[in-house]
Amino acid sequence: MTLRFVLLGALCTLPAFSAEVPRLRADAPEPAPNWAVLERHLIAQLNRAAEIFAETYCLPDGSLRWKDRYEGGMNSSDDAYEAFRGYSLLYALGGDEKLDKLHRHIWNGITKQFTRYGQIYREFDSNWDWMHHGEGYTSFYPFGLVDPDDALFRDRSERFAAMYTGEDPEAKNYDPVHKIIRASMNGSRGPKMEWVKRDWIPTNANLVYYHLPVEGVPGVDSTSAWINDHPDNDQFAKIVKAMSDHMARGDVPINLTSTPMAANAFLYTGDAKYRRWVEEYVGAWVDRTKANGGVTPDNVGLSGKIGEYNDGHWWGGYYGWKWVRGGTDIVLATYTAAKVATLLTGDRKWFDLPRSQLHLMSDQGRQDGKRWMIPIRYDDEQKWHLFVPEGGSEAVNLWASTQDEGDWAHVQKLMEVKGGFQGDESLEWAAFLQGNNPGFAEQAFRDDLRFVAAKMHEILNEAGDPETWFDAKWLSLDPIANDNLVRLTVGGPPIHKRGEMLHSFVRYFDGENKRPGLPEGVAALVTRMADASVEIELVNTNLFDQRTVVVQGGAYGEHRIVKARWRTAKDSQPPGARVSRNLETEVRSQAINGKAVSVALAPGAGTTLQLDIERWANTPTYDFPWEARQ
Image (cartoon, rainbow, N blue to C red):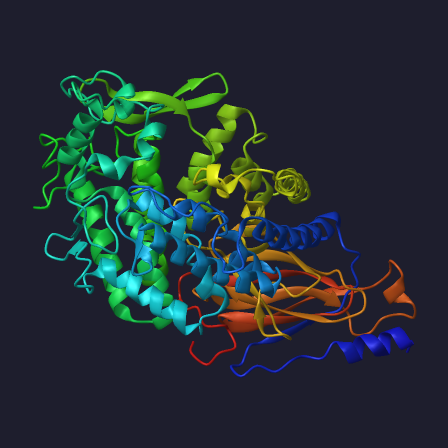
């Protein structure tokens, strides 16, 4: 027996866990493939980029280097929070632990800063819509992923959720009788039932470039009304008044983006009241959609009546069918809510809501060369209109969540019309998962490295004056590219900036250091996803030290791992086999029947791990898999 063989056996010890996690060992040497080297290199570059970004744009107290006064109307902290949303998530995926500590410090600093500006009250945005709330709070949800025991953020999660479940007497946003969020603008000060000009400054200057949200306003005939406040004809005041009358009161689909806030509190606490609220609120929108002939209405009055402030029309609401992106925003909001409801209940029926709205537009589409053009807006005069190319992201992300054959057929249709998958990153990922685009992972990581390099060039050459920066300055420079790490390491759709939380087939932990994320030097690649199985390549790029990776079913342990199959070296090998190409391997299997499995990777070893799973079979939680609560 060679010294190397003895050392390998000694190094491949298996750590113990307080809650029993089944353990496997993989010790077949495997030179790190290009994708694995690039993945670890990307994580290393992101670690450093995050530090430099924060050093450049944040003060020692965590606040932004910016002006002392900010008159932002309702426009609030979302872009500031969002610029750092990748920090704790990167730690959850395998980045440096100090990124999470830095993220919490910055989150606290921004919260105090925007409280001083006047937009934040009780640590939550005073009044804003859930398109913008959602963008900002994508930065909030990853905190629980990486440290469920942080009492401060756990308390915040419960307080913020209470503002929408009806438990907060100062923020009566929810009406449990009519099952509505009572206004399109809402927050820690409750529903905002009336809008005035002050609310829309400085946002009004940006809205000049979009179509008018309401028609038929006397004296208003162009989008220049947003900046025309001449005392003889204050068009700005007129357009705000018309919007307030038609859009301020009552519920809108974009409010469904509040559901991750309730799920976040559930994942910390396990309190069933959050699940009940999600079922009730999302269920009400399902019922309204059915009552409206299969179309999700974009406005519901305070009485619960569809179209109450829009002459009975189901269109015309805030961020609705007549809005800039029309049905695209409705699909995103319903998809976000469907994922949350499925996570908390284990019932897949919720995906019918976004699926129906996606098909509503796509089924009315028409082919234009290699593009499938779909209508995204509706009004009484033009009916279905504004035909735009249907991209792959909505269809692919829905299929990635459901693994439904019908959803895959939709993806295939888009590929057929396009004549392939190239040029659409979502379609390229889908093709990769089907074995038809083997170079995707390597190319995706190379693209991300180019993205980081471009952003860092701007950051390292920053010479601007913070007093002149606009409120999206930091977001435009955010160098943290996590989307492909989410797709390829944990098997999940990228977290949409509009307010989603992480949903994935698997998630990883460092079994030796008891921390979230891939262990140092370990690379992971999800190569296949199916309704009842997932296949992962695991590689220990470190040639000197064992690494133990704990693979959890789902981001929150919601998927039960039934059985594992993995490739490893045979116990008996001919002399010299481990340093030659003649190593004999075998596929072993083991029953798991739990939410996680531990894989000890010998130095320089790799394996193909195939897991049979039952999706959404477990109660989800932020608790780490070795903790007692199952």
